Amino acid sequence: RRNKMQAMHDAELENWHDYEVQSRREIVVLLRQIGEKKQLIRMKIKGEADVCVTSILDVDPDEGVFVLDRSINREQNDRIVSARGVMCETFLDKIRILFSVSGVQDADFKGSGALVAAIPESLIRLQRREFYRMPTPLTNPVPVLVPMPLDLGGGNATLPLADISCGGVALLDNKMMLNSTIGQTFTNCRIDLPEIGQVTTSLQVRNALDLTMLNNKTSRRIGCMFVDISRGNMAAVQRYITRLERDRNAKLAGLG
Image (cartoon, rainbow, N blue to C red; front, side):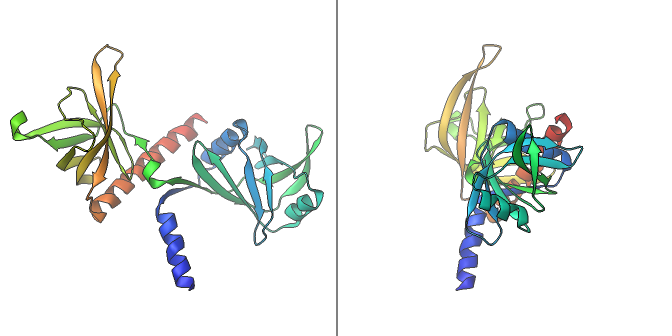
């Protein structure tokens, strides 16, 4: 029975793209954003059923702590303070964020009762895989080779990538070369992922959007879904997405 439950749990997690953040600077940036956006945090004592809803009032990296609103229920507040560990879950821009804190203490913040805890050493960001779209570099675009039908001259059209997810890619068709009818499928497309290698897959058009650029030229953004992608190619796509995210988080931490 347990194995079946575990398999279901693993299958559920398979649908999420998770990324553990361990950089102190990144964690401070994320906690501050959660506080500034007044995102509600579900706080749960490990092993217990009751949940306290709170929010972040302040983050103090110099002291190594952050301040949370206290529970309205006094007994619940006492249980949180005496608990060995508390699990926290919140959302930031459609991304689920999970972290655990220990040693929560009562505190005074701006004349009101609050809770204070050490800044967590790591937190986990989760997002449903198919929605997890990472923009790809604009300065050095990732090329996608799309085989052209013979009636359009054959050969390959090379188009830059706009973004990538575990579900597909968005292509920029600046010269309006491709048939962007929804359902149109391009077979044997090759995506050259920097430092990862070449991915071969079929791409099916799911949406198309005509854009007017700053120089008044028009371009078409074509959203495509991966079709019949092999496990090895999907693993390469996931590795590339993780790399892009690491680069982006490093930049964010540098700005934070």
